[in-house]
Image 1: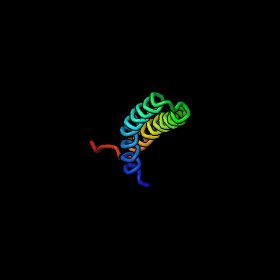
Image 2 (image 1 turned 135 degrees about the vertical axis):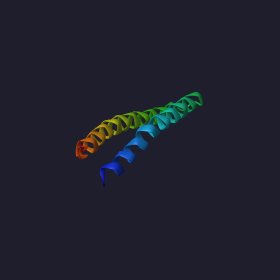
Image 3 (image 1 turned 30 degrees about the vertical axis):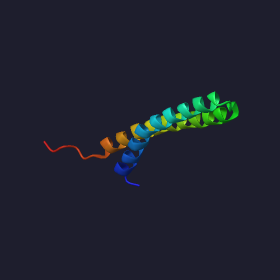
Image 4 (image 1 turned 90 degrees about the horizontal axis):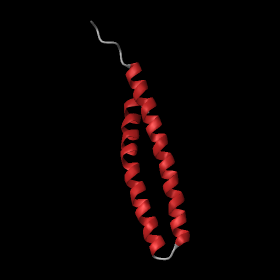
Length: 77
């Protein structure tokens, strides 16, 4: 996978994961208010996994962008 495609994919994931986490927090609260604490706990674990994946996407994005910058040819002066 070329570096620019990887950067685009990681950027989309870095932007979308907080939205997914917000929805999961809402669903967890809804399940807890409906009297389903077990379902809320499961959604909480999924939300934690999304948070970890988001952090990994941010680190991966940083590494890929650094590789893109380092692989560019120097400007001619």
